[in-house]
Image 1 (cartoon, one colour):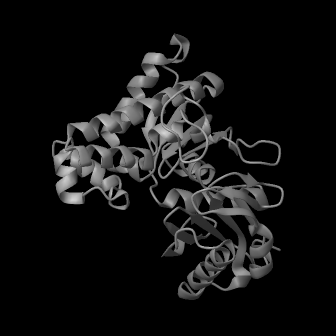
Image 2 (image 1 turned 120 degrees about the vertical axis):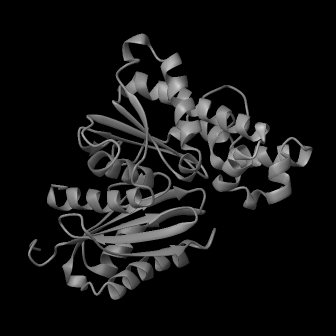
Length: 329
């Protein structure tokens, strides 16, 4: 396989509510993209077929011949078996033990690399975005859960054949709300968008968030990031306190990461952060600086992700290029 014949890299980001794929040339110019909604907790066989068909539609719409594809990177939520390219579990989609690399490499006759979606996002920010020029960058992305990733001297931090940095499942307290499975007091249970929305619904129902109740009601499905930001902008103090509490939890999680890894950049991303950037970034930064050891206080910056939805697909494609060809840029 020569670079002359195969010069296009595909990235795919499998989120909780959407699928996004994009194609890039070797200079990282985008050649096309395709977006689709996921179908909630659809079966894994149907889900991976939709991944493949979304890629096929991108190639068709963008007039990209299959023989030009040098590699495909797939970012997926949850822990990944890196040796087999196997999704071990995706709690928000209900998929377990899915051999995605084998399926897609047969389908497209090219190398396929499967990685955690937040790892992909942080890798993109490290090379192209908010953490460019860093030695060590960690990312915390609150959404339906709370994902984490780390890039250290150009490499994604991994375990022995398995993805890691599951910051959402680390314990921040010995008590508190459960996260829908078995543990209470985790970062995800305290600071995910879903956790905030759940508490916001209770506040609206009790009359403590009148704007939220009037405009969005108490249906959890309607309390998205934009609704939470809208309620704060329109004077729902109780909702603002929920977001500050969640951001404080993320700040304490950042303190743990600083003491373990001494990152020079801590990147916060995802729809929740984008909707309330100043409030969340400011609270996390203040909490981290107040609680970290003094020797680390001026050695890190807390910043917002720059690449938005492009981070996951671009990072997945870039990691595929690094794994296949040994270089990114």
